Image (cartoon, rainbow, N blue to C red; front, side, top):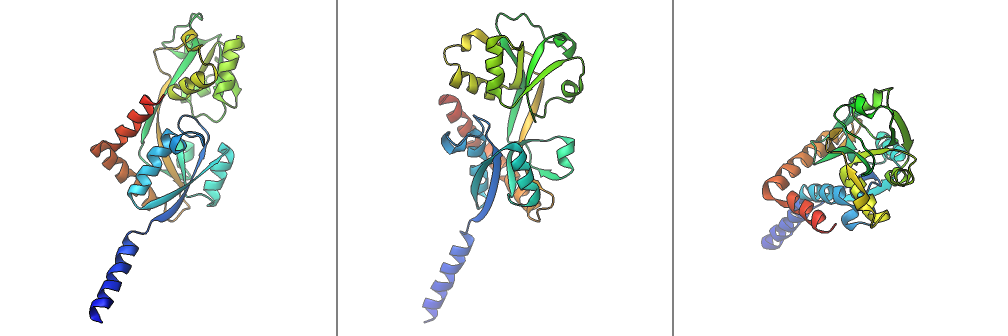
Length: 245
């Protein structure tokens, strides 16, 4: 009888320790980092999901517009936002993880457009396609000398670039390359990135400071990313993405 009791107790303990806590991750569609059609819902979500599962969290991913993602995070509908850049304004209400990826923000142009970029002054007079709600470099955003033409999506700027409606597009190098290969296949050789980047942004997860579990979730994620860097599993995800492009 005692043996049966202890075996039952052991089963309960094992079951409890193996229990995965549910967590909701909200993101905005941003291929190749986030997209419902991509393996694992995109490069960023593969990393985030693997990190959270390593720490016992079962992730449910919701893809929303950027405004709805931020609002849902703030009111507690979602636990974390899964791919976000850290800026002072956001730090007032959000707790950020350490970066798990780095975004290279660069200018993109037709090869036939003669542009040399060493400082923002060099871009005066050019029409520059931007994307709304991108957290660009502060000096770029605040400059009143630059002619910035906003759009809702990167692909809109690439099409404007092709039609000669803008001179430059600016955004994340991976995202621009992905959209170019997806929607302007066979034309990639006609375009190039300016060698000098505008900025470098770390990609984070973030939780609302109003979420009582925020510190616990962010700490667990940070630890998981460190472990994934150490054991090579993070690099493996990046290598798989690169080889599948």
